[in-house]
Image 1 (cartoon, helix red, strand yellow):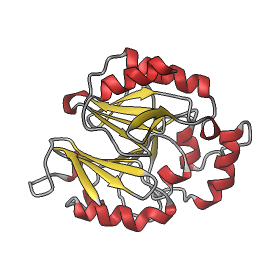
Image 2 (tube, rainbow, N blue to C red):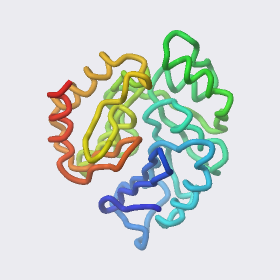
Image 3 (tube, helix red, strand yellow):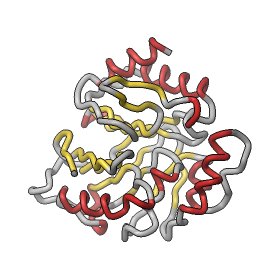
Amino acid sequence: MATELDDGIWWFDLRGVNAYLLVADGSSADETHRSDDVTVIDAGAPWTRRALCRQLTEAGFDPRDVDRIALTHYDLDHVGGLGALGFDCPIYAGQPDAAIVRGDRSPGWSDRKAAFQSLAHPLTTVPDHPVETITEGDTVGTLDVYTTPGHTRGHVTYVDASRSVAFIGDLVRESGGRLEASPWALSYDTSALADSIRRLAELDLDVDVLAMGHGTPFVEGASERLADLAARL
């Protein structure tokens, strides 16, 4: 079911993984909105495509309304829905993940994360639309980009300070109401992961909504929760 976390910030619960939609002007589904105001953050897995389309409709949108897709990272459960959703817009991702999404390179076998990605890679589809490479300091729509490697090499976090929301991908996860770092088995470098979490906490982004890839997003006190996690690492 699609859930509006705050005005124009939608959570798509895809049974085990999350995607999100941000309307730049904060328009709700029953208000007038423009297609170039709409950003989808992450695209779910191949087997969640129907659920994503259904929840997009529940929120009052269809794929033609989407102006851009912002990927937090390359993983099957975050890019697998790109191929069959009818989106007609550019896609954004950090490097080297962007090159994998484009089909320019394979994940390889250099570490446990890359090996897992390589095993799952045949299940992904190279999108028909351009995949733009982004890095720290770039802006995607109204979202500021922060490089946050650790879960993957090219993992990024998107922040809209004016809306007090951070889309943090798989850098962290929610479990039992508690914020946790992405586990060792699913990350390429837990030391880099911890550094990324600490750095975000030190930036004092002052956000309320924390939208992660797995678990229930937090709708208040996000900055404090992130600082608490950083202190525990």
